Length: 140
Image (tube, rainbow, N blue to C red; front, side, top):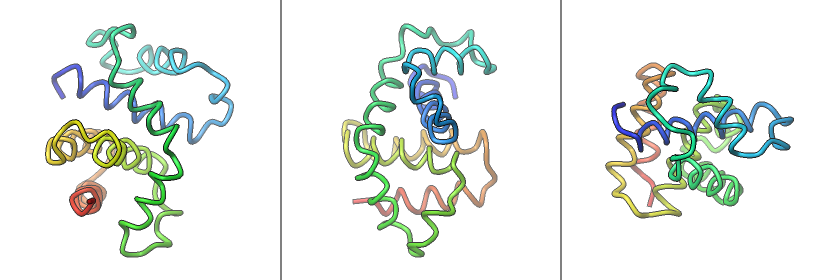
């Protein structure tokens, strides 16, 4: 990951993940969540917390469209019961990517998939990345 938008996508995934696993965080403002994440990650010198419009757009877009995004994900999986057992971090990556591909639709699907595969490589092995790639590639 080398550019600001890639870091913003990573931040958005981390913010969605944090709000998924920590229900207390819901009472925090988005800026507080991101500042906390930025202070505790290795790229804090690479991004300015005040210049993260893409991360904010993704976070609020996922939050606002969560039910629709989760339904899209569930319908995109061959095994519909697998949606409930997906790792929370991988689920956060799926949610952000689905928002950008299906709802936002401003960037080509291939670029979005590539960006989120880079995000997934920070945390997962090839198995999870292959699942992410396959599901996202089949989105309409």
